[in-house]
Image 1 (tube, rainbow, N blue to C red):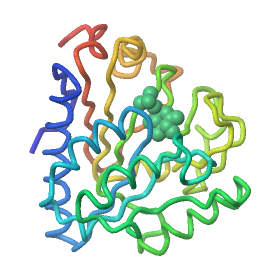
Image 2: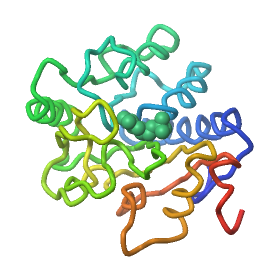
Image 3: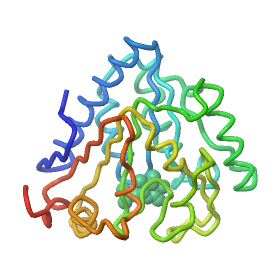
Image 4: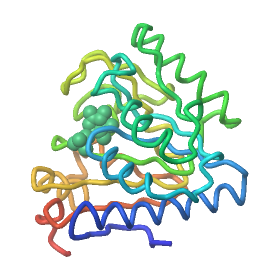
Length: 242
Ligand SMILES: O=C1O[C@H](COP(=O)(O)O)[C@@H](O)[C@H](O)[C@H]1O
């Protein structure tokens, strides 16, 4: 299994293969230990890289997987920018992951009620007061946001909620729900996937610097877990040591 840290790989194909191997190993370990594998997943470029790889893997104990969204846009579940749709379309029917083991938000609710409803869905699967995911799979936007936790937003200080509503997301759509740092930082393993030159400046910022005013992605620091960053050479291009 890969050691925690920063992994710089040539391209998305190499990242997919390494990510798939790590997640498969984490799933095997969790299923062996507890009979279930819990993962929170992200939208955008991460969905494509992860699903492209995992769709090729039939043997990762899919019936024991429980898949939550690290964040979600408050849009209909069949709309293209719905994070849940990306996972359902790519995996259900392709690998033996049951649709009911991917947990969508309820987009017919207000954003506050959707966050509360999703909190209850977490509580149906996790026995701990604060869910401890085996893996949280995260992306980072060019601005340094992760999940739907944006630079300078008051949710960066949220200490109580497990799932928070956001109705002023600077990236459309404005209405979203997101896991908070309270949950992300309890995970056994947090994995970032970040590709492309457009993210290089903030990859450097997060991994090498600006501790006084850290970007949201830099605030993912598992209390008792591993932290991995998977970068392609373009995203890693401004790092001092490669
Ligand atoms: O809006 C979102 O953006 C981030 C980053 O997306 P990317 O396409 O730049 O990788 C994503 O991780 C998050 O889940 C999503 O809702």
